[in-house]
Length: 629
Image 1: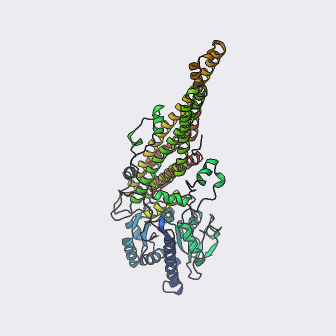
Image 2: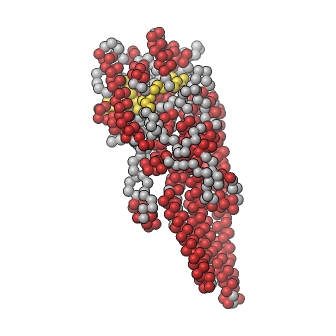
Image 3: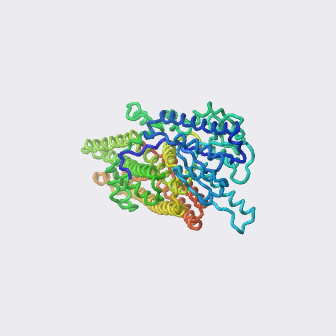
């Protein structure tokens, strides 16, 4: 595991998937049309590479210094796939190959010895080969059953290509598919996924063009590829590549959303308003933190009996330690093949950052409202004890000053934002691990990500590439183990979270109610004493009753405010719902543990549940910033 002092930058990477016809629907290779297809494929790859290098240079501060990593994703079928693979390898692209069957089974697709040799040569040069567990027709299947099985296998391979691709290179004659999983079917699927398509005419007549993928009205989701508006390659490609890699744009003017305190901080230049790109750059320079001195929140949870104080409250786990936890359930990687190292390292940093700033921000909330309630009590007592007034006023000023300093530090250093953004990023990367193990990327959309967390997670996943499987490696069982490990871990986590946060919410609610009740009783006793017993002349009694009747509601109000900002009850309920959903998926996964297709659907559903939970949490948390009480 890397011991870097900052989170890893992603490597600039783009993957081009290949969809196209086999030789029976392509012109003779020696004809003008056949030669033009080869020329057009090479031209498109050259232009994609050139625009990628340009975009890499434009945003180089956000990527590693490694050269651009361009990959071609292909099933290595005869015809278009071989043409594109040869052209890509000759231009320095790497080759990733999801195959519909085991290698020995797939070899029977190549009837001519020359084609079979070409397939073996390309497979040997591929960076990653992932044989999907497709099926041929069995001996007792009728022709229709056999055709259905093979069609499903080719379709699964085509969908794997689309899943791994940022854009699609299609050699297509605009005709109907010949069988399930054919070129037109796959291009229609690409259109529904909003994947941009570079279309090369399989008849060798028209010039290459872009279908979809533009953010200026062309890239809307379509049911079929024919519904996409074409754009000339030279006109649309620069913007297409830029749309794929550009970091999030600056946030719109936020000045109208600022309160008076934030305006004062802004006018004093204590903190500029961060854009999404600024927040990304800030994350990339986060450092390792050996101590966390903000322990107010752990003390509160211990005081109410919701959670015991542990050593990591003061000595946080390092990014490397947290990454090591995820590494334990990651699938083993073949030697020299793409691995999960970058994803796991990025997860460790995001997790460590999120845990650290969760405690810092929550502690700042506790401190603010504790100091505010103390200031109210001091002010009330100072009215009754003139001789104490200078000292009490000084303490009150100190409390207010600490509140201003604490709130200003929270706003200036972005503790709140750094917490919920890092937490979201960690969950995105955690969900990506079992998907990668199954040869799938997380569901995404074309165009610029609205948040830096989505951009960074997508960039890290792009750099992963396709999972490679060594011969005789039982990769489906390994992927099932990884998915099961993630699900079991998250079920346990959400169970603990629901219990701890639910207990914290109930204890704080009960404590606040008791304080209000005690305040009512003390006020009633004081009233009776003053009216009936003449306590007005007993100053110590009057001071005590005033302090209680004033201080107890102040403390109860502070507890209520801590509950509102912390949303502990909401967290508990969301964790319980997520735990129930993941437990159900865990049971379903165990029933279909050897079915890669079912496991993939289970992993996608798990990612949806996990990211749906964090999206709901972020929406609730983002609006609960720390302000002056």
